[in-house]
Image (tube, rainbow, N blue to C red):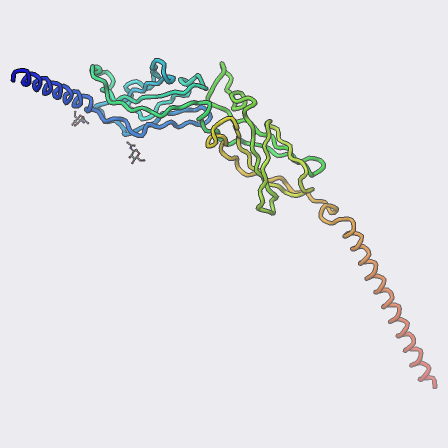
Length: 288
Ligand SMILES: *[C@@H]1O[C@H](CO)[C@@H](O)[C@H](O)[C@H]1NC(C)=O
Ligand SMILES: *[C@@H]1O[C@H](CO)[C@@H](O)[C@H](O)[C@H]1NC(C)=O
């Protein structure tokens, strides 16, 4: 009897402790929708809701399986966003972040574990979105080739004072995908280039073409290979007379003109002769 009583008491006590822990740790709302937003290695962790004055958020992050670190800007802060661009410096590692709901700044932390929400794993090198590139168009002298000079988008990463481009980061793994079509048509073609200077050959002479360019990183997972598409730019169509009309057509045209002129001359001559004859016969009749 006594033994059972003790067991029950112990159970009640542990339930009390559990309940108490829940109460304390349930004091502050848990962060929701913890999400990575990353473009060109500018990497933000975002979440909600906006905190009341009673609490704050602290972000901890770590390479999976290693010690947690803090970013000094994201400790007991009232923001719902933390810029971790400079913190996630090992680009090929996979990071996990955790958002902790804590007392406001200046208020001592509880001993109990604060409510916290974990992010999904994020690897800067594989997961950051790539922004759209800008480019210029140079039409070749033969009017059948076009060169696109792509400006490699800049990243939020620095090497000393030098801002890094996506080419600096991805090196040979960065390619560009060109989508192009004749201005007058909707049929699209694709071309993939390893370099940032892209030459397209065997185009229709003098035709205007429209181009879109996007970064292409084949070593990534399918959904992450293509960057955002550039704005559409079109080359100027510069057709000379001989581009529009082939030589036989021109020769035919000249021949046709010659024929028309000859016929006109013949008709004029015949008419003139007839009129003269008519006049002469009229005169002869008068004389008679
Ligand atoms: C989290 O996302 C859901 C669905 O998008 C939305 O309804 C909810 O309001 C979000 N919560 C916060 C705190 O932003
Ligand atoms: C925050 O504090 C105010 C006043 O101190 C109180 O009225 C309110 O209920 C508190 N809110 C939360 C979520 O604890």
